Every structure is written in structure tokens, then in C-alpha cells.
Length: 393
Image 1: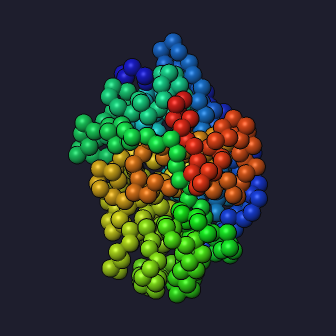
Image 2 (image 1 turned 180 degrees about the vertical axis):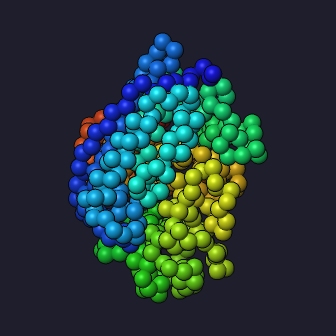
Image 3 (image 1 turned 180 degrees about the horizontal axis):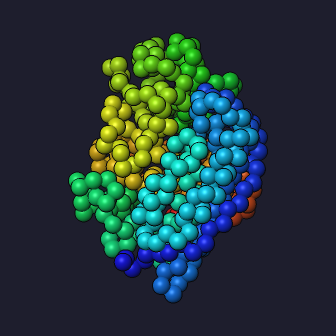
């Protein structure tokens, strides 16, 4: 029994629709609005009781990918039901939040949705457990990811993590500001990019040569000093097509990394690519990460749950892999959660993707009143100095 172990005594679920002010275009199609799921969890630790919350947008176009056979409405309904089922499963669970979270990961195969969709369903439940646990202890979550509050990482990631705790991999030099990474969609005009530094270029992933020309045009419009990442969103069919894309880029166009260019079900056999190619949609259960080969690193996203995200991050840091953090168009509390996580982690690229500033400002109305600095971009940066002080936020 650990001094902060908690028992989940209640969990409630709520939903709201968040409209997008402009469509976010993925290779699977545009997104013009999503359901936000919010889970509130109550825990008991001895004689203390505390409440925590977690939220996420149920991005079924991203989570389902190319999976066929269901309408958008059916997918949204299935994911809502998945959140509710996992919230029920959490009630009665006892221990530290990593142990509880791993137990909930074991429940995911029972949901009638693709694996990634199930992880997104778990995201708000798992986040709420971590948040309530930390609030019951009266300390921010990041300060508790060490002995004696959680097991060492060997319990989840294998014997060579013996004696290592998540806190061992967190940043000691914590920034007060983060640079914002902006998305450039396939159809976005380029006349407003001058001076933008951190850009993620969404690709159609149909014609590698056409995609390379688009990337070159983005680079030219942004000008000197820009940093580019490429995101085909699983759109290419072969590693050779990815190699063709990168070979067609002009020598003066530098790219930091490429996110998940192939469908999540396919392995990555790099065709002599020198740019890091990162696993995103295809990430497995964090306990199986040592089975992953070929990929240079990982994309971590808090929408998949604090437990899986933290374990994946620690694994990648220990294994010397390339790590970046990305967004799922977080709004409100989930944006606070993502910012707090980014502030405390060490990543190969420091930029913080913050898509809701452009695509879903309506989802941030309450946060704008409470933490306006988190949503105000000044010279390409946002102020995150208030994040990570209470629970997971």
C-alpha cells in the first residue's frame, strides 16, 4: 500500500458538441466539429476525498482512420459509449493511477471500436483518475511520479527500467513559454506564413512529387528560420513513396521529422531515409513498445490517456528515441493538460501544437476567461507558466 493510493468511488460522464470555425483537413477527410467528452472522477484516500476531471475531443476521423463500415454519427456514438463503459470500469479500482491506468488498458480490447479509438475513449477517464489522485494528495501530479507514490517503471516496461521512475525522465529546467506549431493544410493559402517559425504541413499523400512541391512552396512562403514537420496521416501506401517524397524536396528545404506516413497496420522499413520517421497512430500498448522496429521515434498525445502517454514518453527517452508531442485539437481542460505535460517533458522539438486556437476557438470560451495567457500568442509563443500546478493541469 502506497501513501497516496486511492480508490475510485464515483465517475460521471458528460458530452458537448464543439464546432470548428474552419475545417481541419486530414488525409481521411475534413473535420468540421467533434464531441467533447468530459469525465469527473471522485477518489478516496484514507479519510480524504477529492474530485478530478479529464476531457478530450472524440476525433473519430483520426481514431478510425481508413476503417470502413460506419457513418460518422455511428462512430461518434460508439466512442461516447466507450467512454461511458470505461468510466464504469474505473469505479472500484484501487491503487496508484499508473496501475489503475494499465488495468484500464487491459479493458480496451473489449470495446467494439478500433484500438486507437478505444485509447481516445480511455483518455478522459485515465486523465481524471490521475487528476483526482494528485488533488487528493495535495500536490501536482508530476511531483508524485516517483517513489514511494508509484511503482518503478519495471512494473510496466520491463526489468531494465528497475529503479527508474517517470520523474527521472521529466524536465528539471521548466519553461514558462512554449513556441506554437501551426498546421498548414493541403488547401490553405500561403500568403500569411511569412515569419512563421514552426509549421506542420499536412499532405494529401496521393502523389509524392506534388506533395514535395507543396512543402517547398510552404517553406518559401514562410521564409528563413522556419522549421517544418510533415504529416501524411497514414496516407502513403509504401515506404518507397515516402522515400520518393523526401528525395524530391529541394536541398534547401529542411524537415525535422515525418509523422506516421503509412497506415497504422503496416510496419516501417526505412528506404534509406535520413529524416526521423515517427510512430503515431500505430503506437501499440506501451508495454509492447520494445516490439516496435524500424521507427525512429514516437509522437505522444495526451488524448490517449496520461498513463499510456507518460509510459510511452519514458520508454522513448530511455531508449534514446526521437520524441515530439502533438495535439488532437485540444480545447479547454484538455488543452491545459497537454500544455502542462509539454512543460514538464523533454522533446526533440519544443514546439507545442495548439490547433484549437485556429480551428475550434468556441471550445475555449471558458478557458479564455480563466487563463487568457494560454490562448494568447505573442511573437509565436504562449505563456504556460500557470500550468502543471494543480492535479494534471
